[in-house]
Image 1 (cartoon, rainbow, N blue to C red):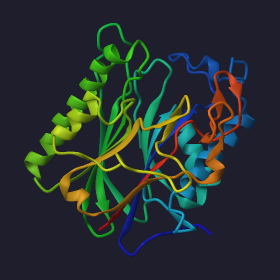
Image 2 (cartoon, helix red, strand yellow; image 1 turned 120 degrees about the vertical axis):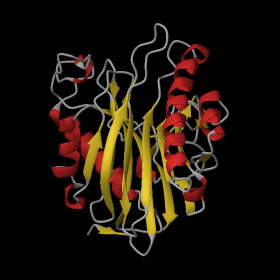
Image 3 (cartoon, rainbow, N blue to C red; image 1 turned 135 degrees about the horizontal axis):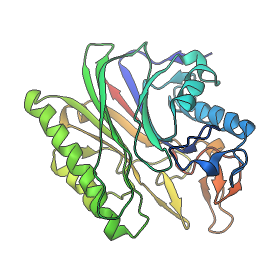
Length: 312
């Protein structure tokens, strides 16, 4: 039975879903690979297995010491459409949770977006919007940043930004300027909120395609945001949310303003066994992903979820 963890504990999750596409061709986007006749052979069967896999992952994020609970807010990256989110919240194994959602409609060429899910039992959305990032040089358009704000059960206002920054394709240094532009736009929005509400509880999360010491993350820290996920670890050996050539790294981050950081109970990586598989090449474990190149593996995602729990 699905239940909610009350008694003041508020759980936030960030998850890159790894290409959660529907099976419908969008003539305005380059989503041809993820169609039944595309190079990834993205069939309805695989689509529904993926949806239920995302649902199973979210359901596990209440914490291994809080079995049967569900998170209150979930930031998702790499989601294509409203169809995906409707099916996830209304038709997948997560349907009884009754999550609501908002999402962006970005100019990303493949149609990739970000979204925020919330429990109507523990959070009341007051408003949302998105802002567009102007392309850098010859690099392609990137995902919009989603901004949403609402109230928790106790009446506390929470401001949330969901980010999927430009990829590292084209070279880290050249693309870093693009990611830095994203961070600067977020900092400007955060500053505007703090000028009106100095004690605002602000949360910025997503896949930043950057590590903690890179400029785009340091830029966010300079505008009074703390990376509470910097030292997050899993209970089953994960030292990051992503594994590259045998090395654990974190491209995903959760940052908060000081008033929200004071309420942090813990931040960890969910690395339960079903989300992992053996790393045959480098040893140890790695995320059990859906695809390796065009080869279908049938796993959950190439990223592990970040879970942050606060005591309001």
